[in-house]
Image (cartoon, rainbow, N blue to C red; front, side):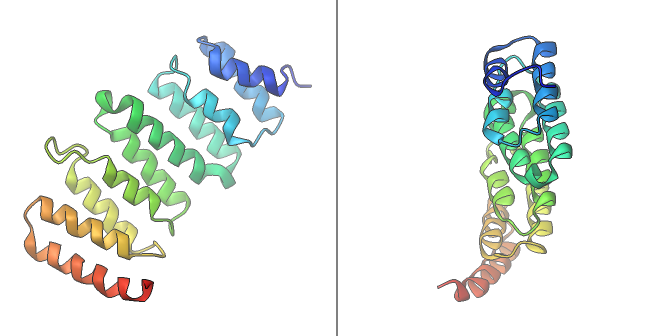
Length: 179
């Protein structure tokens, strides 16, 4: 039998600073089979949670509701990008963009959003990591054109003119069917 109403769960997720209280509400939401991501977003934005605690909740939620894993991982990546980037140099954001890409390999958003994290002056996240991620993604996404354009830009950033031109050519070639 549920201990909390949906409104009580929402309230705890958004206002409580006690991990045990948040965990109890989370467990109750799972027991009630609450699959509304808007409810869990309140929890994910709770400023009292550490990155490890966010990962715990997000991973558990994705495991319980695999059909929501892509959206959960994309949301978590955006949270880590916005709130924890100063502490982990975007590592967690990239990790969750990779998990989202794994959950839905044909989608381009995880790859493009990961590139948006890149600070070329600081090389954070490392450009090699992004390039490898995009190359892997180019094998599975349904629309390769934006991936090829981003690869071209990344190679331009590091001064590799040959690869820049190669991926620009692929982008131009695959983009012809888009219009």
